[in-house]
Image (cartoon, rainbow, N blue to C red; front, side, top):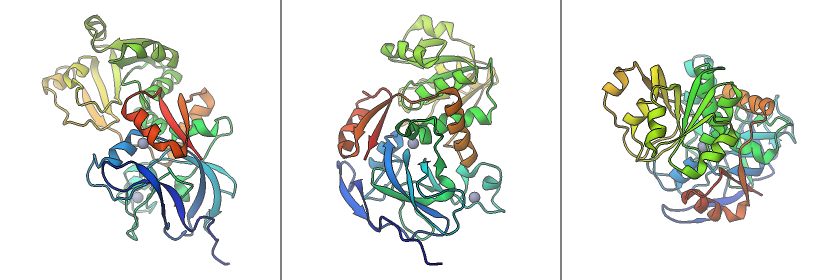
Length: 352
Ligand SMILES: [Zn+2]
Ligand SMILES: [Zn+2]
């Protein structure tokens, strides 16, 4: 059998070439299409906060030039010889992960924790075993391991599916992990790209949802999204009433102004705080804040194969959709600027 011929031997996209620069047109030669890889012609890509941290080298030095974007939706145009579960023309999504080893001796891959595989390759700014840097979705095409391309349910508009690939999966994964259920009291800190989906997922699970924000103007939006209560962290009465009121608290903000000791006061006995965003400053709190109420705190990265599938299926079934602003891909700099200045309600999706 002759090797499949990729449609995009060279991929055109928008890259940042050095820290502090704008996105400019750029092209690269992708790595060879392996037997388990697919090539996707990209229709849409959401702008995730991680994209901005990466182009800014905020989490360590970035491999420039870099094309970011890991909320990708598009069509399969070429597939490797071993790919059986996808067909040419399938509408698929790709999130923050492009590869994991899937080996029988990998504890993480064998336990549906492949998002923590030691051989994890991120969709962009990561290195494959052959040394090539992965490039993301602000482009006309992308190649990924076919295990990390997911069929988009027909109920979901392709543009709206894009933010579910990273933001949606990131918020729903800890809900699955902790088996959150009807009647659980779930708080969400930060009503933005992640938080507005977290409120919807928790509401659909039947949880009693409290949204925490510092923007009074997000109160009505939070209620529309399904929050039963809204707490303005700057309002003393709101804060007092929320004491000891939660079983779980999902923290989706990366603000350096977050008062972690205050957040612990919202937790009831044995409550659990889960960090989903990476704060720009060390997380500080008085240890008594945890000990006094038997509170625990953990982090959660993204989701693996099983969690992404469940995220999409649950959204399709319960009509969970991101609120999006649409821009042509060529206006990527405008989209990034809107995210930086905190103007977006709640996710920008770029389209080719
Ligand atoms: Zn992301
Ligand atoms: Zn693995």
